[in-house]
Length: 354
Ligand SMILES: *Cc1c(COP(=O)(O)O)cnc(C)c1O
Image 1: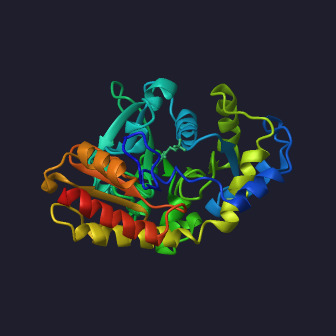
Image 2 (image 1 turned 180 degrees about the vertical axis):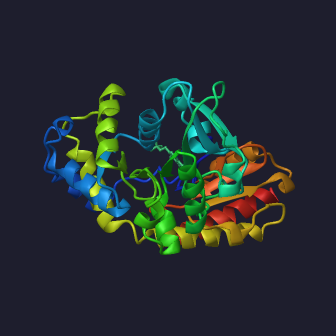
């Protein structure tokens, strides 16, 4: 705990669930992976991973990609042409954290909906539908949703709400894309199968490098025809690989070993939220913690979010990311224990006390 600079390595890192290191079991699976030429579709481990994810999501086929971002961007590229429109919630990852990818790579217009906790309803979607498409409005092509909703606080979409949105999309001839970076968190927390969440989506993906704890990758699924088109853009965007079974093996291992354990991350997020709620000046509603994300405000403590984060790291070795004015985000994952969470709560209390 000699940490006295903001660049110090945190002892307890709640910055994101992307900070996990491969476990010994995962490293062993990586070391022993059977490999081949992925871009010729000859890597047996990649093929196995894709079959597993296609089955998990109830789709005909799947494709392995280097990142979740590429899963979104390739799906958009398949569904949308230049000048056409994607409808998303206004706090979507694709809108804020993919460096303008939808515009840069697909030439897409993005129409936003102000939902609640990153989610919207069929009625709210209906309100932004351009009817009829007419001759001088852009063509709407796609609705893109996130489950769980990241900036929505890791919120889980109710299944009926997805079906409601999907029905409106379908009625107007729009495709539905499911950004499932943390879909398995929703599955573990709700008990609803991934295939049920993805059933009304034309394309859906899961991230391997978030709660599942892999070093790299995402897997995008859809119809056989959709995946064939995705392959073309995978090459075009530079995402085709060679002996990628080395990294896909981590995905296979994680799907077999790291899914159910995410319940611990959710319990830890709850514990953290309840602890933070007891600290004067911190704003949080523990009842809104659905999964592994804990957003809270520090405005009432007299510290800015930057100062709060700086002191927490420098004085206590705990990293929690500042996320905008007065706002902080903590994310639980497989490299933090219950004891770490208890310590993080004590550290936050100490920072507030000054
Ligand atoms: C992390 C994330 C992505 C992007 O995934 P990467 O693997 O980081 O490229 C997309 N959507 C959501 C909701 C995310 O949280």
